[in-house]
Image (cartoon, rainbow, N blue to C red; front, top):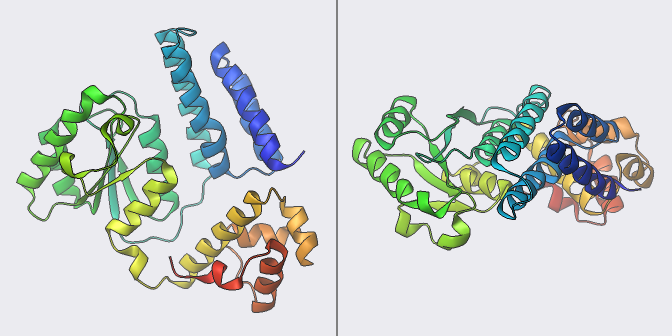
Length: 294
């Protein structure tokens, strides 16, 4: 079975563990995923995040109650704490993000995931957990000299709190940070962030990373060697997994060692032009696709 199929099965087992309230069983699913080569990012995006969405759906359908939903959230937070400890932070980008749910919004899993991925990307990140009152948030953002404020709003009734937070921040700090908005409530609000006073919206974690970088102009500057190697590794990983190839299969197709592929995907190997060509050919992509500036 390929990695994609394994992740689908792992997600189903993980949802089952959450419904049973079994943290040990949930941890075993995560350990097994790591064992068959899934990256921590894959586990976040393809197991934990969709599982939490499913748990929310089951609650709305009346299959599970609030207590069960809360326990499921607690278990997933435990899994995220475990995975976070093993994540490697990318080279520092010299920018800071504050990530938080809006005031009164107690759903924070998505915001926590965005905070973790920003940290992996090299951002300095302050994650505030529960929603913070608008004026206190504005003061905190000013004192921390944040470049981006990422707000999460999960329910439509909390959308007015987005506007309140934005107004408080703009009032207190004229050169306020760029504001990125995400969360399930956007499905009801549409995609235009202007009515809420925000600079951009994100509908998933990869969106949030791209938009955060765009908002501070990181896509326009030249990357350092370490940043380029990290980006190159992520592109190779994305191309490989999208083709449902394992690292061993890519190694065989390119004539390289699997450990060498692993080091490249983790940004720890300065590969030669010959190796880049072999990998590009094995993935059936242009070498320029791997090396292009973001």
